[in-house]
Image 1 (cartoon, rainbow, N blue to C red):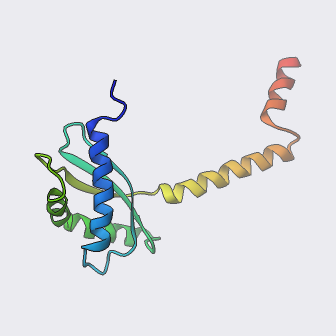
Image 2 (cartoon, rainbow, N blue to C red; image 1 turned 135 degrees about the horizontal axis):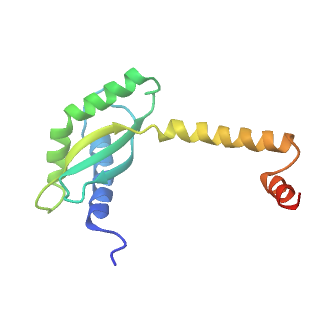
Length: 135
């Protein structure tokens, strides 16, 4: 059993190398502090979906512009990536905004609110379950 398939190893390589290429070789001033949160490579290694966030891209317009700029630079990024490995092909890059950085704190706040409401209502879910089982 393969714990880490080739697609996962390629995704890890693409994530690390793209981060370095964007940081050191991209000259576009519209691309600031970009973080590559995840890369998912198709099983046949033909496509890589790259999930990014950037400092200062808080509104939807800025996020769209970032994705547009990176998508237009995909050829440059792919060719630079191709020079850094010895694989036969380099996956085509598709960029997506990763909203997990926004969703995470929202979900955390919802969970915290539910815990506080539960405590205010007289106990935990376990206590309510015990009461219904006994009662």
